[in-house]
Length: 188
Image 1: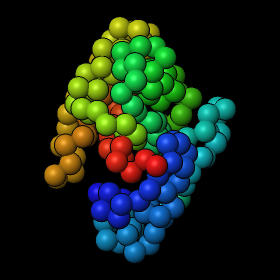
Image 2: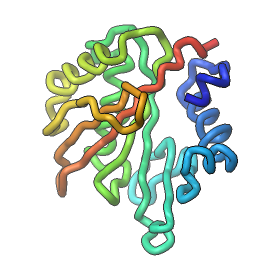
Image 3: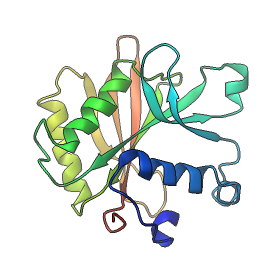
């Protein structure tokens, strides 16, 4: 909401959008205090120790000082209106290079809860696009054992684009929270 209110101009690049979110907002102490995030530290492009994966955002809390594996991971992906149900569109990349990496444990999941942020870079109906992601997930990506497709969930008051999904991994159940940020009017 703050990025939209600030009318930030963004490049159509996942890493550059993530960097603006992270550096200008999640690492800004004034904003962290304003939105009550002082108990968390956010880092970018962190390599996973056990795999060759690199997570977009690592979230550490005081628990991380007791157990170095006790952190959350957020993976960021761009979303647009092109080829929403095809295996070559950004929705498929959202699944293949996001959800699947959590399920296959390319990214750590100490608490079995992680998150994804979908940067909407082109005007579209976000709820309908989520239906397209679910269609891909249950059709072309059946090898990902999904027990609950992306389903609406109220996490932040006044924000309608929060979802969660659940998946089986080789050792446990995993919950992924999905936030979709509409930056389509901010892309230059």
